Image (cartoon, rainbow, N blue to C red):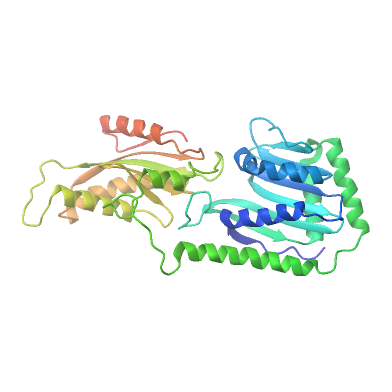
Length: 365
């Protein structure tokens, strides 16, 4: 087998395009059967989006195997079989599509890094994977053998038999001349797609319309729904997100004075301090006059708690150095893999924290 192609760090948006290209290749009319297809989707909603495609693939393939994490085995398309993966299974973090025939092979193997690309349009599209793509039959054979071994007796006897028959046939035939050219084209395609997405995120002339008038760098509720995936295809159990509900309480009776220490200036200074604590890729969402939701992708529990206490300390220190800000913050936080994000639970926890004069409270994700 030739050297395994180097992995690339790719966003989900790019990988969706690559996986669709491989699925289209599986559906193309060709006299090179029989065909086997393995597809690992991580979670059921991602598969459901592509169910009709896999119904068509299963009608052409000798074996079509779909793997995902779930509470129960989903109903597969006719001619396909579904395999349930355990949350702790190594395969649970894979997004993989492999197509193998005696004359053709195509591979996408992507390992979920549980990281996020700053500047991505949505939480889903910015998920990062360590990925390999290939149009080499030998590479597809290697992946079929790997998945066949890892899935083991979770595959039905019929599927194992079909896979074995295709593998034996592949080993009897030489590689197709010119497949290295197709492979090079696929890798160029994915690399350029990723660069094009980068340019869309940060290229010259890019503008961002404010979603909440007067609050620079803050997205309103519609922006949150788009960014977090609530209005698109998303799934619980993947990228962890630290979600912080923050309430700002301004000091009462602040004098106007010659420096203009007004409520408006107080409000703006608080927003500026809040936004200044965010990393690239984080989001701040206005949930009320002095209430905000902070969304910090790929931040673990310890780091999220530390961020919350540092935010409390930053507001405590601000009064000593700023004539425009005298306020405290209360934070309710969680680190969650749930979709949609648990905003209502956090709002209730924040109300409780305010009544208890607790600067930071945490809830289960």
